[in-house]
Amino acid sequence: MASSRSVEYLGSFLGVVGALWLALRLPSSGDAWLVWVASNVLLIAWSWRHRAWGLLAMYVVYLGTSLIGAVRYLGWL
Image (tube, rainbow, N blue to C red):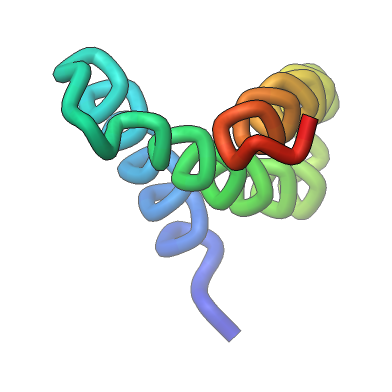
């Protein structure tokens, strides 16, 4: 199993990558939504393990908005 620190840093890194990708407005920038989904799942797991309930609540909301963005980007909605 991945270390807690690895999960924390990978989740944070993916969040930053997603933000930069979307900000660059590349033709593939919509894929940033999928990167954010992965980031949020990792950070939810990290927050749960560390009982960081405020962060957990925030990442759950972020996951919801990322899923909406991903579904719309993929044309499923």
